[in-house]
Length: 213
Image (cartoon, rainbow, N blue to C red; front, side):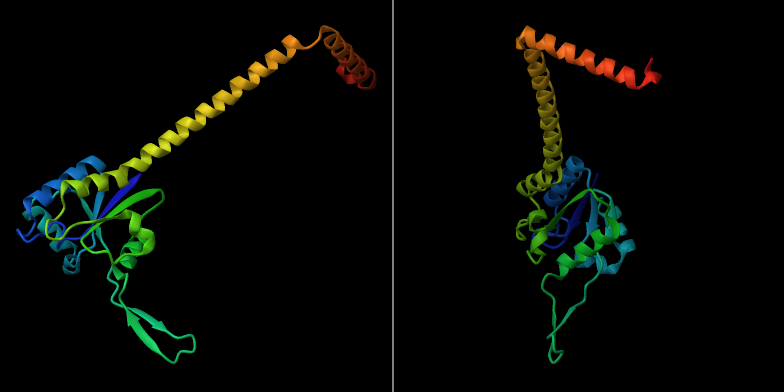
């Protein structure tokens, strides 16, 4: 299953202490190693192109594999239903950019997180957002939350499968025990009657369907 990290730069790995702060980068490395997730750049730095981003990764020895850049949503146009008034909105644009990248590139099932110091995302993306304190950058607490989002669901699915299998086995064993108990406690007289009826049905079938002989 593919896992993705949508990475912002400023406020996440760029802090007041400097560009690509060592602690933030080290925490990003830990996150990548623990989750085996690929990186997609959602920062405005991506507007300088993939070649520039790859140069940054080589020059600063940044962790992880960058596999893409989110598209650029310049504006969103709205209008009244009667078309008399039009306006533009940018709220949630970054969330739309991430949603569009996933629509074009990701195949179900997948998991993702958003590392950002802002909250301007779609409502459906809130559970995937790890909001980083911009003055500190990515810290260990952020990494723990990110790992939980990326990895815990897999464990939950395994638990559901395991408990489902246990329930099936338990029901199978219970049915077998009831079946055995039924024949153990069933009155002998009634059992003999059942056997006689079974023989009668068998003789009736033989008399009508000679091909069974």
